[in-house]
Length: 167
Image (cartoon, rainbow, N blue to C red):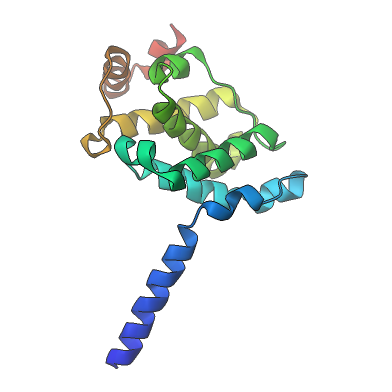
């Protein structure tokens, strides 16, 4: 029985190690619509990987960089989703490349998980900014709370986010 548990543990660890290996992503061909659809799960895994990590880990990890490069490559070419960064998103990231990584991860995660609004960039942006704010709010993610991020958090918590990002 102990051997079975040990084998199960080793298999779980090994398969997790394989799924967390982001070196191979640059070899994945994204050529036509089918390639993009077939890789949605990988993009979602990459997005969750970034969103599940603190900014200091994202900044110093080659795995996170590889995951981000794959997300961006997928975002640039997918014909099935529409991504437009609005002013509130640019203000929130304030040219911080790590926060931009988090935002891209939030955008792709939101789009893939909300297929009913794939071509509605306003809805995708709104849901993505909420994911981004939730990430920034989590103290474990070690996000520096800029004035604008604090305003976003307050607007979300006051249920005035839609009005705030329109202004």
